[in-house]
Image (tube, rainbow, N blue to C red):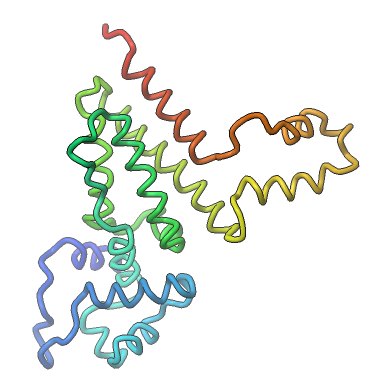
Length: 232
């Protein structure tokens, strides 16, 4: 029931409550207050009481607009994710568009790490989030990929973005590669004979050490092979 109500709030025309005094709030203002709280203290810090206090209203007044936290989080998520990227008019080709798409999604998740938790599972999806999917499919339209391949490409890119964003969010004091290197390096000390290939790989400084860029390039290289395959 809560998910259905959230969809109504996200998608249908936002009208004022029919009963009670003239409304003084908007759903966007309520969502923005929730986003500010979540950005500062995480999703667990968001309560109807905290949002009401930030907006200087009573909790009962807030319930006239948003029935509960499920609906509130759905509104917060769509606001935080924001509108999908709009490539510059000079940006042509599916690859530059998807590269920019993935990097901008990565930036949104880093700005609002709690959204990594709220954008999984069965839930209400808002127009902004669906717009990101539209942008990805639009970039690949005309490449010759089938519909399922286009959707799988978007899902694969999203998974890569989410994974690295989670690692970065969990290691705010440094790049995830650096944190992993320090952790694993400490464990390998004195155990090199047991893990010889891992030790050698960790010691090799001649290659790239940026998981986000490396993974993104590998995914797009793979899509390039599919786009360029002979048509039957």
